[in-house]
Amino acid sequence: MSIISIAMCIFIVLELMNVTMLYFNPGSKLGNGIGVFNAWEQSQKNEAVHALVKYLVYWVAGTKLIFIGLLLVILFTGSELTQTLSAVVLILSILSFYWRLYPIIKGLDQQEQISPKGYSKTLGIMIACFILMFSVALVVSLF
Image (tube, rainbow, N blue to C red; front, side, top):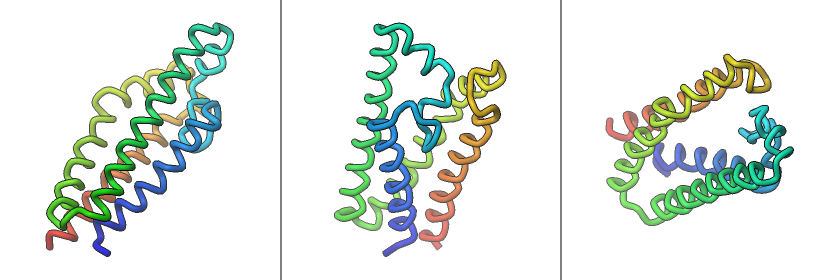
């Protein structure tokens, strides 16, 4: 098993845990559940808003399932070149977190709309670790 395959397996397992959390306990503050956003509880006071929020949470979970499925196909049937290029795509797509999502969650954290306080920094570090993991795997596999 190549280093990229191992990195993909780790990513798949972590993402499956997140998908499980989003589908079965979205309000949790564990496993990147949506409960870290104070607005989750506030949305429950308005049925229409909460329905929209739940729809978006399940949409994210479903999208993650698509990526997990594609990664599994790449992992089991993809050539070494396909897996290497997939690692590059994963790095680039995960980096997009810092373009749109991180500024929002950081701002919400500063406005005390995230519990626990400082969660945005923790999430930012976790995402950076994913990028680092795939980058190291990519470099090691190339040399």
